[in-house]
Image (cartoon, rainbow, N blue to C red; front, side):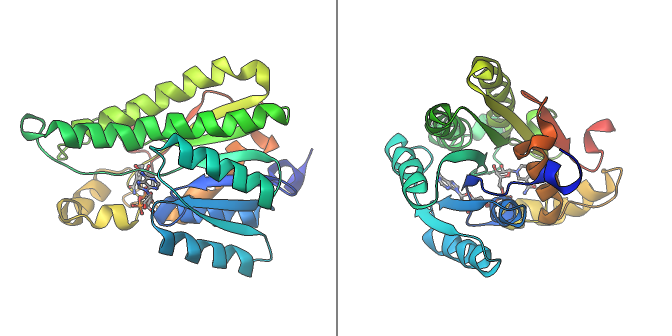
Length: 256
Ligand code: NAD
């Protein structure tokens, strides 16, 4: 394969979780721009409806799925609907996630558990439901959205629960990559740095963002558009020898 074929998702069916907002929405649209039909899952129905209508405007097929990634039944139903309505599932991007900041000594166990449930268990359950389908088609590619917070502890942000959940996603990705390598399923991660999305309009983030940008070698945060290329790369034949990779997309933040 050469040229655009290398990065093409033409004829592929994809599922994106967290597709109703921010990075997940933009990646869902980006997969469609690369040729895929896309099932868009989110807990919030209004968000995915908007993503689906944008994708349909591009001339690709899309469906809106409402569900919670912490519920295996929702994920089984979502992967079944994806295949009934769009085709064999061979690409998945797991983006659903939540963030909050609380000093560790004050963090309620319920908040810890919820963060781990959505960000880590939710990614595991998503991978499991997706891989079960992909095995039946001879393979596929899964991309998990982790975070640079899984590699470094963000200076100035007290979020041990979030950081730990994302470190878990990176190691889960490596573990599943090795476990499923002989089933034809590649599993990779993207670890974004600070990215302009609704997640970063949290009150504790607004003032911090300027500080974070000055601490980033590129001196700015990412736009959601800048997550599309990495996601299409890891989903497409261009990355055929990559599995278990954690691709840091952080403007150089983790270099300093
Ligand atoms: P966002 O809040 O804009 O989008 C997250 C989406 O996930 C929302 O639509 C939300 O409804 C959905 N979601 C949350 N919990 C869910 C659940 N249980 N089931 C189904 N859907 C659920 O946030 P974003 O910034 O686009 O974040 C997307 C991913 O990228 C997250 O995993 C986040 O941790 C990660 N990330 C974000 C940044 C950043 O700076 N924005 C940096 C690194 C990693």
